[in-house]
Image 1 (cartoon, helix red, strand yellow):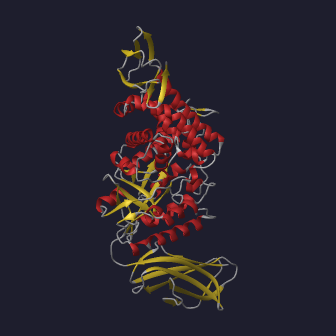
Image 2: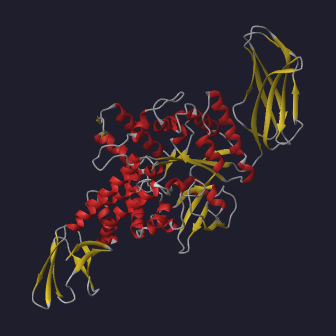
Length: 604
């Protein structure tokens, strides 16, 4: 049995004369005498560009022979394929074929790998975990040459390939769960896992490693909203339920809290933000800009339907809304991102290595379109290894790809922030279509029981909207900066109830009940707080009635008294831990309601 193998350390070769080698190994029991040769093919050409025939030779059993030749690539540019052949009596008995990218002098192509590592808050209001995914994917795995799970593999990869650089979005809810577990351990419905448990120690090691990577610049960290909230989708969905003001405020706070968590845990204040599910909406421009977000990543599909000054997807763009708010957007290369997301189900490490080589060549081709440009490869950082099942050679593919790129001259690894510093955007887009990475549609989150669940959740959140009305946005924002505040607990519960991960699998009753539990918890806390305000009504005489309103909380609360008969209304500002006496016209105030927004707190 004969086997031919091209010997090359890089798929990138400079134009000019280059030396190529291959070996022929005889794994059979008898000698093989034949003719080795090399053939160079340019894409689309029927005749080879170069052909080198070596002298006929004999390869003894259990031995191998190496052949080298210099090929003139002075007139070649772009992708070529090199084939090594060993022919016996006019029949090809062994061959190997690899693509190469032939480049000339000029600016390199830059590439940023953006990994979205996300885990929704999996704990119930009681603190008990519904599922241990945030921890399981740290310590559990089934991968070739790697131990533990996807999050651990990520940091191992950086150690194996020191020149590897990337962009990481560790969702704030994931980081928070890690920190809490390291400090307190965690509980599931089956067991209590203390901080000393090896599983939690694995989490501590990964958390420390991620912080170290961010600290030395090997990984740029992105921020985001606290939970995995599909912002663009919910802007429309909340409007449909009359809760747009609450939703905008909630997203604004989630961005602030999410960035605060990333900075506290990883020691770096992110400049860019991950947009969950890449679900865009032009209403997000102002929201992101006011939160101090400089840039985000969307899909090539968004770019195709965008309008404005358009070049290629391989440059950053300013996206500007009608009010003059601006945010920079990078567009991911859909083909390359999906290649990693969905096509790494290899049967062997050799197959994974070959695929990494081909990926590197396909990536380099983008230089022909955009020399000096940036290719963004963006995708979920764990799912390509584990869905729909464990893919044992997926990490090895990324390792081999990282090795090919880390020392390349024609393709340079970069981060979004670094590229932006040297290449500020020149073009402005006035419109980017709404929608997700799934064909710009909301299809994954709507229909049937999912739509019903959104409606039920928003019904619960009307009490939270009422609380926001009573507090006012300025006071609410101040209270939310204090994590011990009861208002913080309420808004956090609301955020978890809107986390899209649970709606992705919304047909599953267990996932559905989980978000409903959190929404009901948010409602319960908000109603309990608002209902603590007490009213006493006393008729003074035929013409006057006295209303005594008592606020036992530490909050300033604004309510509106509405007369059901006359349509009169009166705004009442209740100071913390105080009472207020109101004397009203008995005829006009025979029956009335105390409201926060449209939410009725009490009736008389």
